[in-house]
Image (cartoon, rainbow, N blue to C red; front, side, top):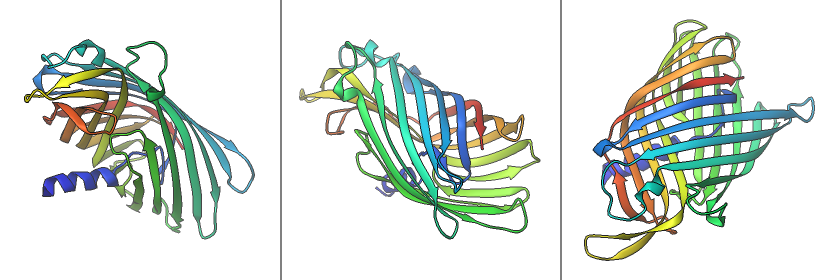
Length: 298
């Protein structure tokens, strides 16, 4: 039980969020590969971007965020339900509108509202159950240091997505500090890490983070358990807690290549019903985790 509660705590502290204390990704392209147990595999291609629109000279912005993900789940083991091939490919497309402005004492307010379409599209067209709604409110505090590159910042807030496997508001919490010319650390969102700066072009970090995936199943699956009871699976979710090393190489001040390699501390893929209750566990074995890509940030 203690391990279970510790896992949930890590999930709450590491919930991913696109705008955070250390910078904003204006554009990102990445590929993720996670081999599963029983010769199954999960892979993902993701492209995302943020477009800030300056509203005044006081630091007020409207931010438009777009994202597309192509998730591939290859199941090579025999499952206990029909239509196993429909679990292969899932697509997610989302659009969010953010608003942020400066407050007193180096605080900044931010908010986001958005909608996503996430489905295996096994039926025809887009269904109501394919739609997901997101909202977030957060505050950012910047701390000033006379000696550069020392810096620090704090982010607090809350985010809610419906529907989701964790169907309740999740906290946004991050404290970042560059305490030395070669060292920084971050606790909270989107990951807890410690980073070493070799120079302006090369960094190495160790971190614990979370990788999540959720999608609707347009054709619900009838699952029979070992006792003969029948339940419908209506969506699929993946939740990984990861420990990894990450390398970053800066081509320019804002354009960089990144590569992460690690191991999952918790790795679950589940089919769930409309109430987000577990129907069947497809995978629970830990495995290696690989992710790399290019991003442009400010």
